[in-house]
Length: 291
Image (cartoon, rainbow, N blue to C red):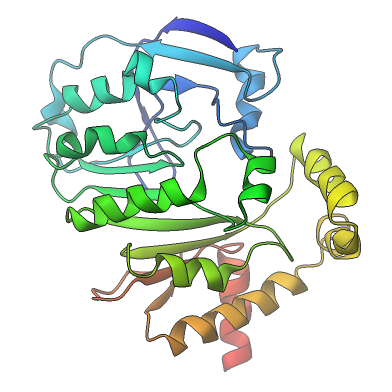
């Protein structure tokens, strides 16, 4: 593992993401080495020659002197790195940021694949209405370990439950959904009692990791090769449209609210399911079919 210390001019970056006004990434690169990680494109901006997952830039920034200027702003931690990768236990850069932002009045959200975040539970509770999401795309530990080097699925669920029981808004981010492999309904069933929201996102193959995933399917799940060929080489979205319909019907049968990305989430005592499939494309198609 190649580890570098980086002097950063600042740590809060204005964001165009729908989840925040600012994004924060206390590290560059990510040791979880997810084979499908969209953030691997960051390599071309950092001049790293190492494979994705085999380097980590540890960021150090000037102390935030006036954190109150961010009051009311949405701050998302972890857009292109996992802020709780295993080296956070050593360097503590995410914890340092949280400590610097205490009392700022920001709206805090964090996404991770780790249970190390439990260490900072009391610190996160000092923020007003924080939210934390864990990425989970399978209940099959063998497949999970083939795709990432993060902690086990059970450890993620345990951390989710800990935060949920502590009164912090939690989400199960079912992402990415692998066609023919991810049992979304089974994950929803496992998550529904320990989270407030469930997010759904399709596997979008692009860039260097497209070949990696398609080679994995060819070598390990050859029966799925025709399906992946249809979706990722012929750009046929029929699978996703059909899956969206099935999942919507399933979610509504459970009595859970179901919304699309960008729509206002209703207040509910049951988990709210948010669809991020191709954003507007499936949303428009689904509504057209229901008219």
